[in-house]
Length: 148
Image 1 (cartoon, rainbow, N blue to C red):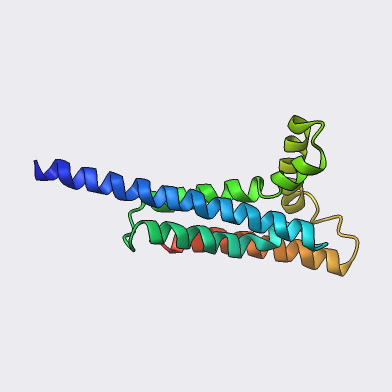
Image 2 (cartoon, one colour):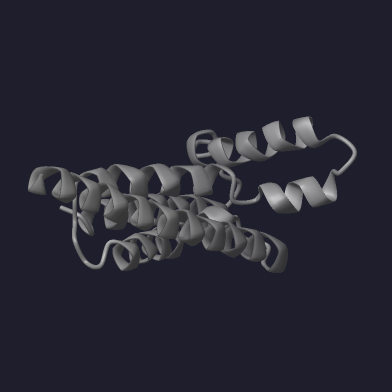
């Protein structure tokens, strides 16, 4: 009977941590969107703060315990918030075609990281792409390091 109680408490703890992570993900989407609206830079530069925000939210929800499943949850939420981070702004700007705006928003995020490295127009553009890569990798790293 005590084994069932331990399993129940573990599942409840993981669910609470996942809910906190989703709330952190929503805040990260707001962070990406605000950066997208208020600066001329690409929002992927906000990868590290978004990853830290999600990892901290999950850590608060799990009361400092670190099961391995929370690493998977944190990294999944981080990648999803990266891909859909500017979606609210893109849907607001293109409200007449929501499906195409969604596809274009996700495509722009993927294209910025994987498609523009060789066609950088200037050193500033190259530095922005390089900073985006560093921020993305640092965000993935911090969401995993919190729970290992």
